[in-house]
Amino acid sequence: MCGIIGITSLPNNLREPIGKVVRRCLERLEYRGYDSVGIAVIKGNSIEVRKGKGKIVEVNARLNFDEVSGTTAIGHTRWATHGKPSDENAHPHTDCTGSVAVVHNGIISNFLELKEELIRKGHVFKSETDTEVVAHLIEEYLRLGYKPFDAFKAALSRLKGAYAFVVAIAQEPNRLYFARNTSPLVIGIGNGANFVASDIPAFLEFTNMVIVLRDGEYGYIEPGKVYIEKDGVPVNVEERIRLISWTPEMASKEGYPHFMLKEIHEQPFAISSTLAGINEREFDNVVNLLLNSRRVLIIGAGTSYHAGLIGDYLLTTMLGLDIHAVISSEYKKYVNTINEDDAVIAISQSGETIDTLVAVRAFKERGAKVVAVSNVIDSAIPRESNYVLYTRAGPEIGVAATKTFTTQLVILTILTLRAGIAMGRLDQGEYRNLMDSLNKAPGLLQNVIARTEGRVKALSEYMKSRNNAYYLGRGIGVPLSMEGALKLKEIAYIHAEAYPAGESKHGPIALVEEGYPVVFSILDDDNVDALLGNVMEMKARDAYTIGFVPEKYVGKFRELLSVTFELPNIDYRIAPIIYIVPMQLLAYYTAVARGYDPDKPRNLAKTVTVE
Ligand code: F6R
Image (cartoon, rainbow, N blue to C red; front, side, top):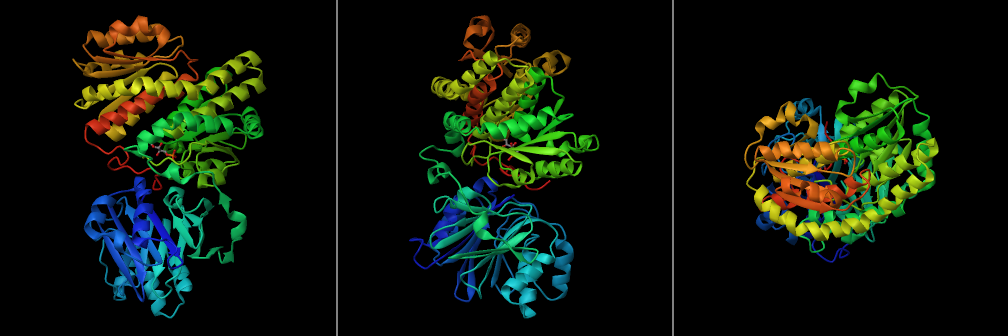
């Protein structure tokens, strides 16, 4: 996945060495990859490169990026695809002369044939990466007498695959070239400095004026200029500038030890902002689409899929629509059954997840209308969709999705409620009650965090030495449990499995023995008695039973639970927005207790731009 950054600045404009600025920008992209890191700074007629294997803090301690001065620089934090993490495979990659440096996110699928061709022409490669061919290709065209921009374009025309690049060429010390095809790339327009990066938080400290690049676009930045082209035709840059409401604080930890903890705590605010940003007309356009569709698919990956399952539950049970939530990468099962009478809701916090994007394109090709639910304005999935509903969670930097999940649930709930009114399946009274509950969610959540955090932390001392856990629920509690289990698995590296509690006796209970943690999500619905039976079954096998329980049922469950968390009595259809939060905290504190960094889980990157 990888994070890339490029900066061109007027002299003395940054007030600190450019290496230090690049390092800070990269730290905000570290969620995209963190197995190696490097920077390249144009120095006169050459380029200084410092790079190595390890996290930014480790490599900076060894190589001191912070001392490197200059006005034009690129940087990269890597998530290995071609070539193992090593000093040689770290980006930037250079040509034979050391005067072309490239950082890249994505995969060049035809790199082997290009590499063979370049080796035949005498180029010497220093790494195993696909990226290095780009530096040598540009060198080759420069050697043939092409001007730098022409050499860059000629090299691009030879590449196949998914990519976002930033390229520094020493003979043009104030300019950086960039290109996007599938992998995300955003331009930041600053004062006396311009930026190009994989994601907005990288440069948010300097500017909130952005242009989100589209597939097939390429061009260059200079300190006072942005130039973009597509298929040889210049793009009107002014028209594409967006002012985003994110602040620099949102992209910093603000005293929290990790972004994930900060983002968990931000949820009351993120939910309020999403509620405040609801545009009824936009929702009603989508409602109209859904009600006039033959069937509706909801697609998403990981946490966004879990939000989709909850949306599916709400729309199916409350409105009786023909809905299916589908994992994005499994879209092929449905693609031939879809036509122009159908609608697809594509959920993606980043708006760039390739699995979801590919599915959106396939469904659109069949004629379906697509509604994007995303947190990133102008990102690829919203842009390619017919309608967009934005969450307003602010930037999410921790790899594990937290505040974007709860705000996705807010959007899907409001969509269901408004559709319910339009269909006459909900009366005004019920609509108002549910909207009231939703509006109370931020306040209740604030309380839940304050009341449960200390006890969750204590529970993590038990969880930290476990190898497995089950997360069980019924009804809407099933996707809620799936999300709880995913959090524990991905950051605390404990094998956690979620399934409908009714399935216990059909196999999984065979694994349960003394002390085995089983986490129950109990909601105020018609599953309470059945769940009581399931808790008893687990207790009878000496499981360590943990329950998230509405206050009014605590008396019923307390004796059977090893640990009970009393949560507010709230309509079960709204409850997942609140009940997931102590589970997020449990995953967080367990990861920390096991000595892991929750912001940088191994093998994972936040925005997955390879299939
Ligand atoms: C889990 C997590 C991932 C993402 C998934 C989809 O905590 O963050 O499972 O939910 O990669 O990402 P988006 O929503 O950006 O499409």
